[in-house]
Length: 255
Image (cartoon, rainbow, N blue to C red; front, side, top):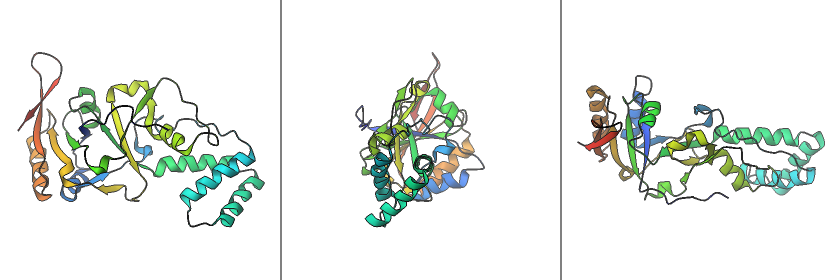
């Protein structure tokens, strides 16, 4: 089972854009303190949450694992009902196909909040904050909201994981917390949940400690965000990202 490989940073950051398509969602985020947990289908990495899993195993091994799956996903079924469903898949010979579909569904429906350790990463400002015209949120991680946050691990090769032999926690960790080494510079941390169908979770107001405006964000968008912060009765510190004069990089200046 993957535990945090490093101590959780005091602050984690989330880069965002602001445009006509998402303005209402951003407004609601500030006014109603809502965070959106994405589906893996929305990720820009085709490998993310899609690491191959070994589905080799005997019918008896599948009986044990599928019983765990049913206990977790359909707790309202009693032992006899679980056994009936599992034996149906075994007799039809479709237990592996069902298991693959279940893993795919699990990855799709799980909401993931992606964060980073860095607030001045030039590439991430470019990728996730519309070429520095967006903004970045700063969150204090001492909130219980971040109790289960974990760092992403970066690998050159796929890790070995078995549907029937690996623990459920190991499978979960491989699905959600391993990415290709090419993404290492993002220093990503993740939080996931399957509770809210809307993928929206309310966060404590004091958890948002800062808002950083991109170095190319226009004044109109800045004023919108400041207005929404006031309406939401939030009290983050405001910062401006500015290009350094002497070398490549960004300075984060308090406003």
